[in-house]
Image 1 (tube, helix red, strand yellow):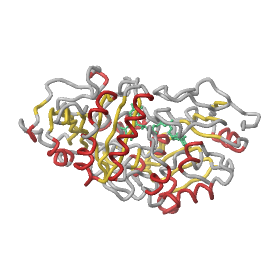
Image 2 (cartoon, rainbow, N blue to C red; image 1 turned 30 degrees about the horizontal axis):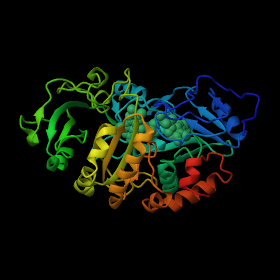
Image 3 (cartoon, protein in one colour; image 1 turned 90 degrees about the vertical axis):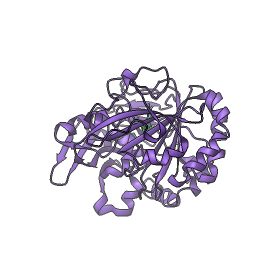
Image 4 (cartoon, helix red, strand yellow; image 1 turned 90 degrees about the horizontal axis):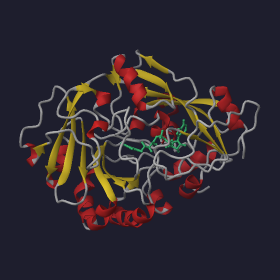
Length: 425
Ligand SMILES: Cc1cc2nc3c(=O)[nH]c(=O)nc-3n(C[C@H](O)[C@H](O)[C@H](O)COP(=O)(O)OP(=O)(O)OC[C@H]3O[C@@H](n4cnc5c(N)ncnc54)[C@H](O)[C@@H]3O)c2cc1C
């Protein structure tokens, strides 16, 4: 199980638990190599090995009983290719750090998640997403990956030359190797304004989603209306009118979780600012969300939004007592095999639960049951209880992914219990 080799670098700098603290990693050894050659030796000498990013996932997808490797010790390179409009970054870098640099150089990424603290490779591996009907999840910006494969070789796959296989590997769940570098598409930098509006009627949800660059809606399932709309609009777009969609304007900054400090959140009240300081809800220098929490999230067809909300309303009395906040978003369809947005423009329902798995899991089973008619695809990095056969049926390329895993990692070097459960050999 243990990686062999004279340069082995067991390290105390690698987190032993995930960010939320609900997963204690079962790895026998932890490593923080500082060169790609060291990464290669670690992989070549190990029978079970995984990468960990910033540990912001809530399940055991990234866990292993073998070697757990943080690539945060590799050189933090950010190389912009102005001709191609792309940037190649060290996979372990946080989106927030990459974004700040890009903005300084006149560039942006098309979208970001709600927090800038996550690593690029870890976020891409789980198809992490932001919101916006025209924007794919973060993995759709990936043009190429450099990774250390099961043989310990450094390999390169890219969108232009590796076609369908590339589409299978991008949302790779960490199962094809340790991603050392990621190439991302760029757009010119831009400015946004963020407005928070209160008490949206459910019937106006679709119109709200389509009203701006990126829109998130928060509810706590305690009132018939949706509590808050976070509208992130291009800075030169006119502000929402006074009675926009029957809402009122928030007159002070908000945190999505009631009672938490708005200071942790990106500026609101229509103050213009760069894309990377408005698209995430949380500031890089502050703790995102509440910390004491579990999260789950389901991607549904966009057309199922009204039906799914009505189905969930029937169990609102179960959801509300164990919920901190529920967020509704949209994501554009894509072709990546394991993307929850694969060939579906999506309506996405997220739950930030209280930090009490015993209380949450029965409610989660109820939520999944209510959403089942809409073929929900769970977020790969969050808590879900979906049966493997059901999950397989919701991904048209599931069998292709399982076959690709067997072809590229025949001895299961990068396998985990969770992967074995959902992609049996
Ligand atoms: C407060 C909070 C807010 C969140 N907001 C959002 C959101 O807005 N949208 C959303 O979609 N998700 C969100 N998430 C979930 C989060 O984005 C995902 O769980 C993401 O995978 C976390 O990235 P990470 O770097 O922490 O990855 P980790 O949790 O460390 O790892 C995730 C997976 O990626 C693999 N991996 C990591 N690094 C590498 C590498 N270098 N090579 C190969 N595989 C690798 C791991 O093995 C594991 O399987 C949120 C999570 C938290 C805690």
